Image (cartoon, rainbow, N blue to C red; front, side):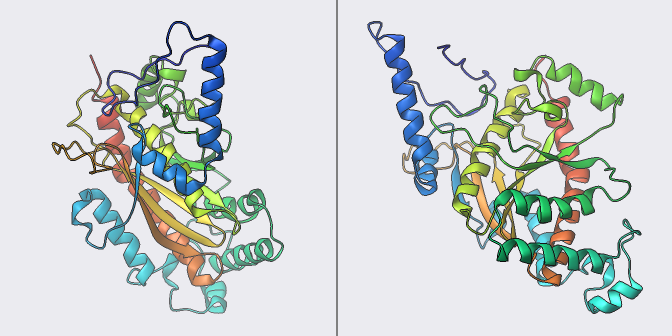
Length: 362
């Protein structure tokens, strides 16, 4: 069995030191030991996996969003304020029909980006499908196909099923590259990603192609699955049916984001330079949509061994984005998605280019 290679030297928080077997141990015993550790990790409850992640130097820490957000990155504070305005109703919801009835909206107001589909008709259809999935105890894959994907498609592919700079991509089978995977934690995957497509033949596309040629898996991301090799991931989504566990979703998102941060730091040996201040994510549990965010490690001079989460990423969870159980809830989801897409286009894309494409090791 081939011994995994160590991560790149540009990594900014150390891997957990592997147990070095004595020369007398056979490869068979090593394989058995690895299978045993992996089995224990995989079979652990989501809560126990969160605890293990806090102790792993390649892991992460889960925290609730604080009431006082002043300690969070400034860009995250600003985004949270915009999402809060949508949730509280301070921002007008899609196409200015927040105070209108569905009947009035159906007759008088259509989507400016989807003139072929009245917004109210789409919302009614989404709610009906979500209720059917709930009443029939459908599996996660059915919720994903009948509800979640429909919302993403309506927002991100407004005409002729074509997207702009930001598009969505299914990644249910996309594994984390071993170069960025945690050493003692079980591998995790998510369901969908929002990716940034710069356009074939563009200068940025050529830069990405040149860069990924020297990266693990020949991929610009922490996974080398399909088109994710060339389209940078901006936001990740994990879906769970009502019977699913939100804690398990947090474990998946935390592991995925931690690997993504290691990938982003691969080209940037300067730990003080981090143009990307956080990674956004969405967790969907049945009808309910939530926003989460992972903040990169923040170096600490403290010698207190009980200060956990300072030198590893921190997953902050979770802020409500809306619900598919009612019309206003779907409106909030659509508005929140549009807000996040705008943030990806205007802020994340610029930060990605500064950190990954322009700030490279000579």
